[in-house]
Amino acid sequence: MDVRHAPSDLLVIGFAGETVPQSVRDHLDAALQSGVVRLLDLLAVTRDADGAVRLVEREELDPRFGDLDVPEQGLVGEDDVMDAAEDLDPGQTALVVLLEHVWARELTAAVRTEGGELLAAHRIPAAVLDEVEDAAAD
Amino acid sequence: MRRVGRPGLIGTAARTAVIAGTAQAVSGNVARRQQQRYAAQQAPPQEAAPPPPAAAPPPAAAAPPPAAAAPAAGGGNDVVATLERLAALHASGALTDAEFAAAKAAALG
Image (cartoon, rainbow over all chains, first blue to last red; front, side, top):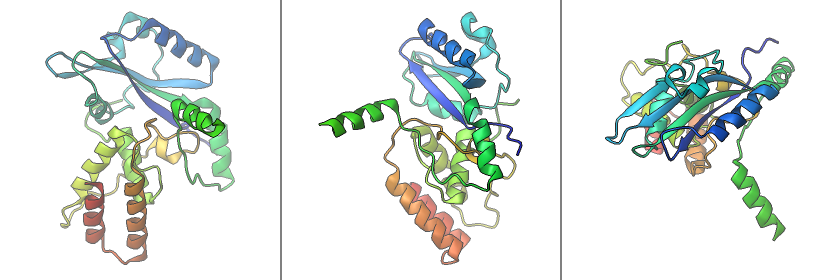
């Protein structure tokens, strides 16, 4: 069965300052180059010192981001971004990325073809895994 | 693709979850806000409740593994359980559309 998209994560990552740190860009590059995930959309949202929220498209972003391929630019809706911006403090910037889990595409297709049904899908934050593991070890 | 003036991904996924009665409905502040907004829109039990979002098939909600969008571990379990019970009552015919919409809005409020 044809699957147009694999399930994807919409990540909104806030930073204290007005730029996205270089090391974050480096690790994003590494993840993309591995082919495990694909970048569908990318933009940033900033809250000015006076509280106004502004969307920053890839083209206006830091030049370090300008060369990323964003095949489905616009798929993340304004609603998604503006709501996320409510959690930003004045002077803060958040990077918004829609990452497709390419590795899951064939699995998704197989589940559909076999009439399987996804009954639950939970993303467990890394910190929660650490916490539960530590608690279980006590 | 147009970013403005159409349903967001998170809102679409949340609406789909509410309608389907699945458990990934509420996780994270953004999803909660969008779901509350949707419930508020649905609340007035007048003739034309906005139709379910047939127009915008959500890639995230339609597909399996691995993750719901938001990594936050929000405290939405009670709300989700309530929504699931309401959805079941609605599906069984015990609640009318209007009653279901009102109860859902109350649960989300």
